[in-house]
Image (tube, rainbow, N blue to C red; front, side, top):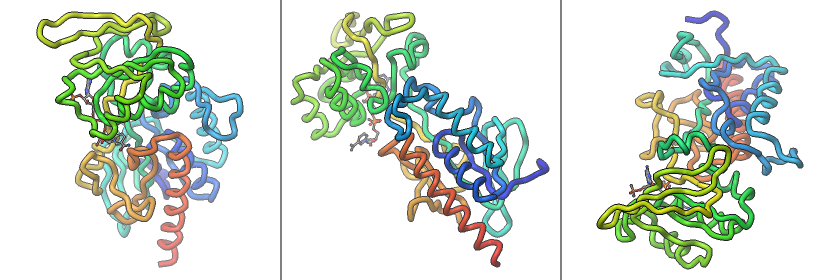
Length: 316
Ligand code: NDP
């Protein structure tokens, strides 16, 4: 077990975890952030963050994370770059957070801000162009595609929502659905809304095969698999939005706290999990808003609740 065990462990180094760490350390709580490895969360793969108040000229995702981290360090928070593999214990006896490479840490309370990860198709070209025209967040990056043609990959409600949102900027949005119209996963309402939008064109039975371009997107190649498979190109596409779902990073909590059917933390009264003394923040508990600013606000609430919990413990 590690020496210097903190009062509070924050699991996660994205906007939720870092905001929790800023609030807690500024309130003189001995705070350790286990920030994940690689550290920083989803913002480290975003290009510009233009919708976080206070940055009128926008800020690069990684810079935003670095500055927030610096702010937490200034108030005395400590950091470990590692992944949590398990959490155990309870409010009375304290908690143990076990990491992959640095062993276990004891704490009196925990804020879980481990985030979620976008699912990706898995293409080499997709990996190369993430942040350079390939994105998993229309709200974050749609603005950069004013009057351009983009493609959305996916056939669920997220894809319908992202595509509809993108028509505010893009001149045309293709939705690449790998299955047929009859098998579409999206709800009827969301589908109809997208269908009725004159800027959206559905391409069914269409699996994305390749995103063209070295440093920016200059088209996509799609395999159409209806009857005889054949490839076709959409050379006018300059942006690709992958909307095939998100997975919360909560595997290490299975059996310890209650998770909902999608694997997100089940919370009550804003930040309370099913285990007293364990608080939730950010995308690990939110599949609806998923924004840096909402995650940061959520992190603040969790830190305040953890602080109240610690005060109550010391009163006993
Ligand atoms: P879903 O799991 O519902 O849909 C994922 C989609 O991605 C499916 O069409 C799936 O195709 C497709 N897909 C998966 N892997 C690949 C791949 N490798 N290549 C191409 N396509 C792929 O995820 P969503 O994020 O859309 O939704 C998650 C949940 O959130 C749902 O319950 C949804 O209703 C909800 N939601 C609600 C919203 C709202 O009400 N406003 C908005 C967004 C989401 P296939 O069907 O062939 O497997």
